[in-house]
Length: 358
Length: 262
Ligand code: SF4
Ligand code: SF4
Ligand code: SF4
Image (cartoon, rainbow over all chains, first blue to last red; front, side, top):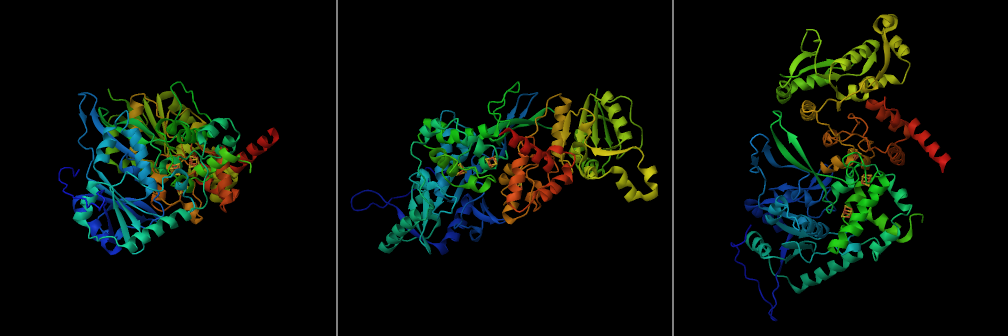
């Protein structure tokens, strides 16, 4: 982390409140990224096999900041899909965590929805029970956000997650040939000052920013009414809509894998060939799997596909908000793209409000 | 004392045995056992007593059935090795037609000699109880190692029940269906980390049909995406012809039964 090494003076405006925003020309982005890559592991969206994914980059020209959606969200950099938490020796009882990978990292080019999702998983992994693996990576990660334009599956407008009031270090808003850069932290200002060539924002830039904001909010398909969702969930808990929507589920787990706010994991031990030493493995889990709610003795709390689909949304629209005051969905639309049988939050919200038979 | 293990083969191309010999770490793992017999590399006879039997290949003859029964009576642990043993695999393709007719077509007048005691191909679990299954064509050596570890310690193995698309997303592949190419990931038993899709080939469900698979819904999805029931079924049959639940007949009869009820 950069703490201690940072010497940044924020410019103050005439009324004494600080502000720090700059203009970064698009042709300077590569240099910025490559500069960062000397000090950090830089992870940014790249095009791979016809889709976009977050990958480590060294060459700024590989980076695609104008991307619709990555297949997997940045959560893979905080909780790996499958990772060895530690190695153990069952005879001596020795534990070895030395292999645990934590490197200073910059997540470059993260959309607002994904930044908000990280704030939601923070509540889980940095809340009552602090997860040391998550914490170490989170503290060593700087986040540079980037603006986007909604695609038809996006519904961040429903949850207010299309904007970032906290959770990133820098945020870049696309103004065509340049970015309007907002600093949200000292570290953000520091990396910008150190590695990027920027200039002051003119009145014209600020006008372009306003235009962008307007264009963004007008680009959504339609508003989604999410008022009183928890109460509607109570009212419809035993509604046939769950069978109609949930029974076709393919139990594939694609939705939870691609979801930036799904955080459930499983822990298993894998033994080496000698049967003495081994690895404690953590891997992503999915509540759509029939094993998820099965307990010793074979009882399954959610034996049907419909009950499992209902549970996924119950967690998102009822349980998480009852504890943390926010819905556990940022409307990124990834599950909408991934699910073959049209099970997605938009459809659930509409069915809760209007019924499924329309 | 090390437990004795045997590796034998029914109808198969020995590919999974080759796969075992390809990986030094598996050979090391196998040295935990006293390897009493390995059909692929030894010319000796099967020992009379052994604890673990790894069986590759599908059941296609009377002789296979006799052998299986003897093995089951001897071994305390039977492991099905590879797609042919687990699902009937490629030999299972012959399930569709009359076995006699097919033999005649291929071997002509030699049919009687070659095809003595021929049966409809079947996975070994159709005849005997199987303790562990290592699916796939060919097997994944890491999975074999994991299962052997569990077998030695008499631990249960809990195979994944989910179908494969979730793993395919974790591997960050674009879905084949988006480009109009059928892929069986949505019904396939997971656990391969989408190996084929990640290498540019659609899933053929060589690991078998997932326990959680929703066959009916998959046929419906395929039909909506220009892959009719016959085509979808023929893809399933490449590795899963012996799985009656995965055929369109099973799907239609289930549907009719539901319609009668509702
Ligand atoms: S539920 Fe779907 S739309 Fe909501 S955050 Fe998860 S993947 Fe995105
Ligand atoms: S809801 Fe859709 S994506 Fe999720 S497990 Fe079911 S079929 Fe797969
Ligand atoms: S159908 Fe095939 S390509 Fe598509 S998500 Fe499933 S496994 Fe991947």
